[in-house]
Length: 215
Image 1 (tube, one colour):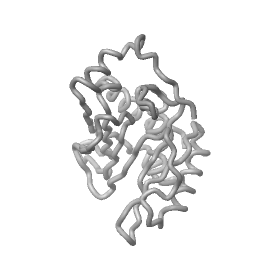
Image 2 (cartoon, helix red, strand yellow):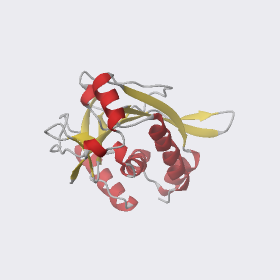
Image 3 (cartoon, one colour):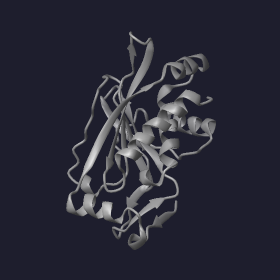
């Protein structure tokens, strides 16, 4: 894990960061329906699970761009990690509670999928909120597979100091008009480090990856 401190004086986002972090603190969220028709067919044929595949796809796009790897260090200096790992939720059906765990991100799909599935199986019956030791270089994914949604928003008391993105996945649904299957995906970001251009690029690249991924 390497944290790269930004030279604030020469940073191209200095003015934007000061505005949206200090003058007018601002976070925002965006929800897009991602088409997963072919992906669903593929994972059913290969008998693999959708959630780890989506965690991989999201993680790959997130790690391609510095704005999604931004954070503050212990001295409140702005910077970014070389790599961020997905911290994601898993549901305990018996207690109807969830745990938040993380898996080390690897660009290799098979390697990541196997480790992610191993982590899920290991901790799926945990009664702890965070059963794994904490690490700093993470971003967040949660899944609400019981409902589809058109928007989603988190209200964080200290959200104006929180730079990593938060992604929430809903229940996929079929569109009878197009005969396609869509998955609602929401991303919540801090405007100090991420503009509408960056969130739009996230969704476009995620859709492209899902359309072309070989699993």
